Image 1 (cartoon, rainbow, N blue to C red):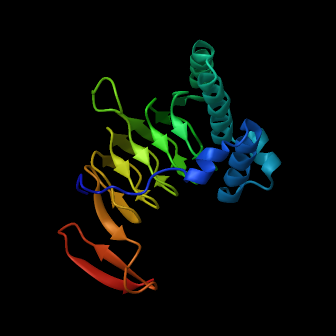
Image 2 (cartoon, one colour):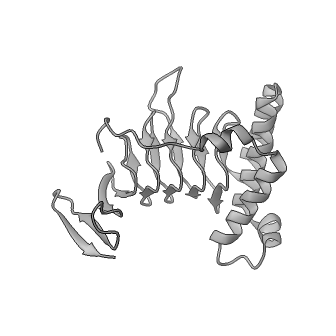
Length: 215
């Protein structure tokens, strides 16, 4: 997980230019949460009973206010969300489409964090900083990233597309795309893409030994 890794990040240019309406973003979030939650019988179940979805919906509204010059109101509402749901997402954070927080309690996302499309974050996860003040100081997540429960990602690191962060991991370095990382500090234990054979994956153990197995 070296600093030279520069994965493709975030939303596509076309989607950035589209700037979907707030209601559309929230509808997409609800549908994504429903598709990822086997316990939900309908999208209505998600909108009525899912704390994670309510946290995401609150963030969407607060971010809209923040982007439209209502900084103080956005921050006040974010404080209310923190008290009500036990999650803290700064309104300045940039989060892509179809974002899901599962369960939601204890999630912290800092103000300079950037999260791509189709990401999933579980309860207790933190996208925080390492003590740096000013400038970019929180993680950047690519598209399709999953962050497990209780994981901590610190600093202005880049986490590539399709990465899976195991529960309880501490990530302080860049993570290559399409890998799984676990541990404290986090290390790559699985690469899900083989450049030569689409039906195989490359596994890596704790000692750096790698081998290829069939999917």
